[in-house]
Image (cartoon, rainbow over all chains, first blue to last red; front, top):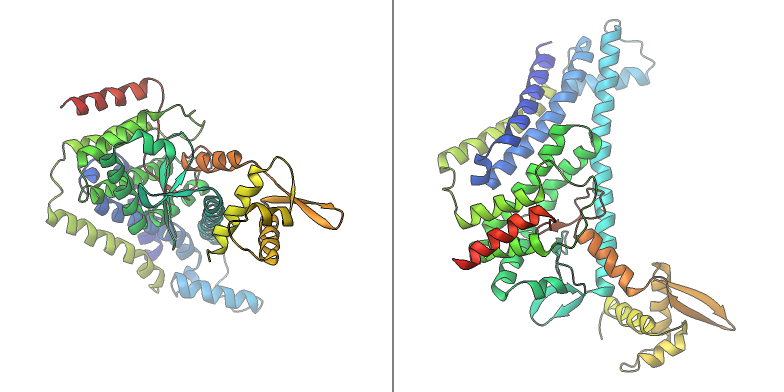
Length: 308
Length: 118
């Protein structure tokens, strides 16, 4: 019972933590650290939530979650004769709920991975047929379209792409800043950070916290890339590039694609910290948060293994 | 010798520039600036058809190839995804910034002016 309770408590801590972290603003002063914490919260929440149900359901085996699952599977295959004690209804329900939730989480994550992979492959194929190289911006693919777009297609052979409209919109210094930003996304594999949150959003589309979390992690990833980019370019030029992009407009807003935090305030938040940067979070605090994240991430698997 | 991707792209450009469907022989002639073996042209046309970029119809003993979609419609597809307007919340691309409209854009415009004045 203690394991089940501990896991349930852990899941609750993660949910409350995520709810609080959405509103926290210290995260803007250390986006990389905040991203690590978000990932720890996400993984732990999933493992602890499902683990709590399974730990309760499999308690009669007295083997813990992981070995309990194994024992249950073995006895199910053998026809269920060596049950240590009769299952009561709550345990059966917990078992069904726990296995379902675990399956949904895994399937949704895999589906999101496959879907992303396909979308990127299609995008790459089209780019190969359509995009051109521009001597002005070596190593960058250019798409002939008047709209403003700059993005990267992540992957093993990642590509940075800008539209012709972008080249006209931005000054040379601003373009350098944008490219530094995109290169940071590529190098730090921010797409992998975002993937599980996009998947979770699809699994729980009605959850406000999940929606907020996805949006917040999306913003933190942008800020992290801004922070890397400002080492290679003028932060001021990055800020004006952002504003120019934001006002390039003439793009209809898709319905249902916006979160509570409007895109304008997200852009403003990024601009403000580029123009008037606040001090970074002290090193001591940053290290403590990372250490906490590591401990949190390790806690759920350990509880899955614990025998009682 | 350029890669297969480069070849596919040149051949698509040739076909897009034609008003009607063309045969492999015509493609070979139109792309005359490089001496391509006719079999190479055939292979690439076949690949592009299998990938769904070309449609082919029988014309006597030869095939005639026509683009399935216009170049512009592929550009539009790329841009829809690039600007995150497909609405499927995918994390396939990482984008620089989102454009906004209406009064929100006004806030950004004013901020930009202030930054440029300083």
